[in-house]
Image (cartoon, rainbow, N blue to C red; front, top):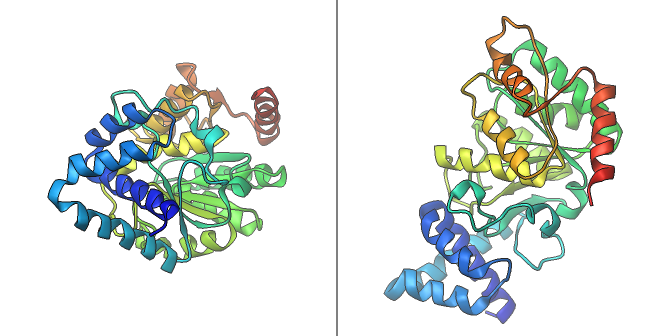
Length: 301
């Protein structure tokens, strides 16, 4: 293995450690800061894997070979397509998994610097209403016509409605997955995942083989927020995890928008709370949304 390959394998090993032991990753990332320090990574392998480090190396190499077989790649800090500017908003040093930078990005599809500039995250309830799906399609059609990539999580409801609308417009869309890219979740969306891999990109911080798990979905919110230029919540219940995505986006300095709905709709109560609390701007129409998006991009340093 060349020195470059060895460095990539080190990050791949760290990437798998994130899913099984985020605390040890947080400890390491505090020492790394924003610097890719290969020596520290080597010490990490020795410290955390001890006499099992040979098996750990084999696992990392297997992950890299697996993503290549899937037609993808593992993107690490220093690579030309590593989204450094977008991820710079993440502190990487807070003592909480929801604030940490990813150890790397497993990718299938187009180069990240092609599809993430700019990207609009469109998220919402899994149990979406016809109203929510209609508004999602309108927002996506308008945003893609102005050159925005649509980013979401590939889930039921608003997520998949956003991806389908982007595909129908022949526009790039990105799925941020909460599992390895050797699978689709939900499985019913496998065809959507494959279409997105051909025209946009699939992104995950988890190596192939990692199954969906609740902590992964919660952690995904911060990555969706970080990789987008702005976030729109179409529908969300009061206790929806989607409101957590809005909170992460706000902390990262991303503009957050929410779509109002009928006051009798449980699916819109989370949006109404975000607007009432001043944590999201109210979407009153696609033209207003696009104008504010254009303004927010122009103001970005």
